[in-house]
Amino acid sequence: MATTEFHILGISLAVLSAAALSIGNIWQSRGVQLATENKGNKKLFVTMLKTRVWLMGAAMYGLAMLLQIASLTFAPLMLVQPIGILALVFAVFLGARLSGTSPSREIYRAMTTCLIGVAGYVIIAAQVSKQKPIDDAELIAILSALFIALLAVGVVRVINHGQARRAPIIYVVLGGVFNAFVASLGKTVILRIQALLKADSFVFNSGTVLTLACLLGVGLASFLAIYYIQTAYTCNPSDIVVAGTTVIDPAVSVLIGITILHEATNASPLSLLLIAICGLIAILGVINLSKAETTPATAESSGDKSTKS
Image (cartoon, rainbow, N blue to C red; front, side, top):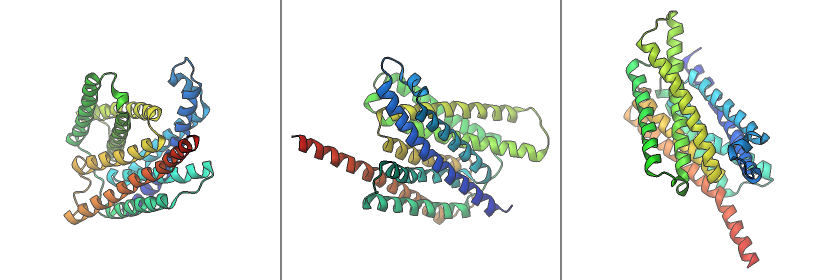
């Protein structure tokens, strides 16, 4: 299979992952809402575990992660990870269908902007990005970045103990950051295993220890990503959670792919500039889409209050 065909397969799996993620986000948001209403004196997490729609959402979220990891088997991290932005676009259509409403003109305009940015990014990134075996120095760099992120989170929690709920967006940010590390570390494990299978030999050495450490990092990052995203749903509108994670996750992943994994070494300065422009266009579309979705609800709420007055 040619490199282009591998890229197409990776992109297709990433699109399926975005679709599964959008369904999972809708179900989990609904599940958290139902669990909050029905928890009584019980712990919220215990009630969520007994809420069927939340469990279905968790299963779809797990499927989305598996599809994303599978996509990374066939294409570079910086190519497929930003496709996750499409999850918000899918969520808009699904939400409109479930509520029986039609998206507004502003929503369509924002989605068009988002799709243009993602399409432009993918087309350019597919031409300049490449996969290569990850050496020990690069793996250590990713693990060090994860350690720094964990240390920063620990320091912030100690300094702002009990104050996090005053800035609930922090949970969205942390969920997106650790999601990016799941993809990045998962990518390194995939490439290391591929190199091992290609060599048809196994030697237990420092490189093996680093790969095992990477696996532990994937598990830790996955746990933290799930924890912070679920916490974000309890204190943020679902649109903000989806929009935030679908912007932060790709941004951090692309940064790691370019700076640590060197996936864009063949890219010219012009290509990198065009990639950055397309990424900004996609992010602008996501921001406008989030605003367009919340504006009708705000207006309706204001109208209800005026009527009651």
